[in-house]
Length: 333
Ligand SMILES: [Zn+2]
Image (cartoon, rainbow, N blue to C red; front, side, top):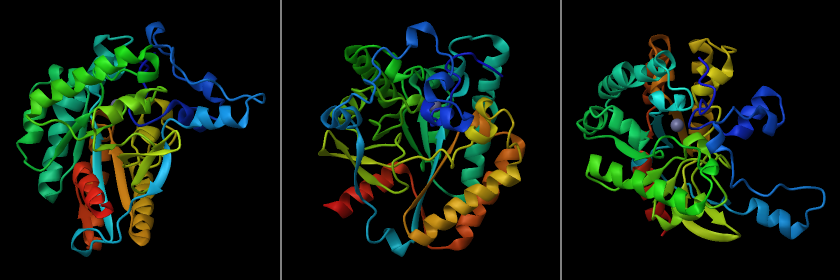
């Protein structure tokens, strides 16, 4: 289903789509509606750039230092975060017609309840990143998540807008403020974390996130364990709980994958291998799923299997991302 714009998933940066497609990043960018062209895109690095210009060009939000604590709670070997980017029909903003919208609606009507039941059965927590207007379109979703008293809800934009395409810092600031305010009202608690829609950071996004006082971000991919974000060479104090394009359902099942790896068994094998090394390295495993994608019948049975496998290892700490960030922060200080 081609939404011809805004069709990328939350945790799949344009550059990665380009790499996966074997194309140069610019030509591989999914079509965007004209008002969302990256007006505030970073200045390109060219052969004429000086060292200082290159340092500045890459400096907004970089890997600072690893923050994996010496020990996780109760002697666990690894922290496991199950995260769900609840995009639903907001990936179809550019062409909101009933049939493609219905593909996203499935996430709210069927997948989210199915996922909540699965998490109940395993008694494990998860983090749900929800665009504010996604919560508006499906007002039953947030109360259903909160009713479990185990899960976290984080910021995921206003309409799942691509922040580099917003055009100016003031408007981006307004959208972020609105998103925080909406979720604060809907959940009764100010969100502690944020995941950028489409993993889109404009040159000013990180500054806005830092100034908004988020405990953590979960949009970057510079490591596979917690780290502190450095901004323009300085420690920022913001914890990054990085995602991975490998531990994501969209690359295997989403529109951009074109069915190239449709086997849920194969996807399970990849996730299992990813977890196994995280367990061995005593760091962190973050899984990112999109309910309307990974919540399909044949796929969620593999998620069930994965959770059961992880639990069978013992010495594993299932936690919300907020819990992990708080633990890391306390261990750091
Ligand atoms: Zn998303």
